[in-house]
Length: 295
Image 1 (cartoon, one colour):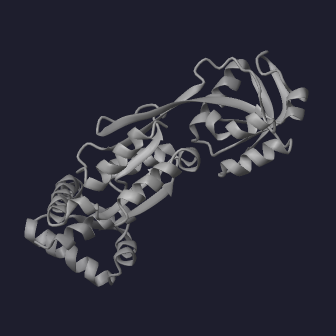
Image 2 (spheres, one colour; image 1 turned 180 degrees about the horizontal axis):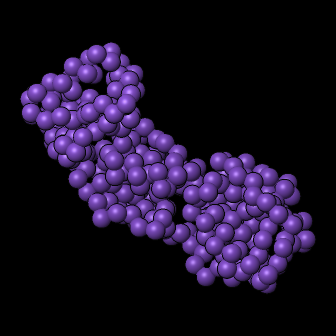
Image 3 (tube, one colour; image 1 turned 90 degrees about the vertical axis):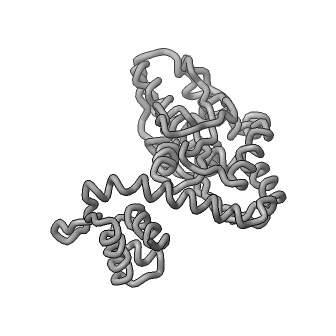
């Protein structure tokens, strides 16, 4: 059995098709088909069946996935066994929530790079739900995310790295106009400037508005926290953000907090990985660096 055939099989699953797997692996599509045929002959099973124009996983193919992941995980261990572990070689794929990546992780990453310069660090700014799903399907080694997503999954191991307050902020001029977010049954003609719909702190604030029967004029949806802050400072609207992201603006008076009745106005950040994932030296180092950073 060729290990590369197993990697090809998982790549097809991750990419969603034979053609995309071929592009990812820089193979011809005929090579992909040959490798899958070899696997099917060796194990006397059918992994994919053609439905219309698509190649879909069979029931046996779905059952085959965890065995393949276990084999490749063990091969990773052998790979690192052959290396000088003190050098922290290899690749490390980490998905990180944007606010954490922008404001909490730079020093951690700097410390990690100083100790492990030979580790190829692949960082992705991701939504917390996507991070959780990518940990489960094996496309990420580690995730740094907020656990407030309604359950992680029993297959995920997590380490708490910090609790953070979330606050409603506006410019001083905006607060003078629309300062009351406690009285229920209001229609406040101001825009809510925030991240995409699956943003944790957006969901907290929108639930609060619903409970209070408070409506805002509209929502401006952006993917950049610095851009959101700049628009809030320019009186375009208000936002609900982790306090650590606006600490300097609150201190210098560019932004001010608006009181609310939100009872659970904090979120918890964690570092997480799949329970079956082998903790490589690089993974252990990154987790340890996070824990020591006191974020």
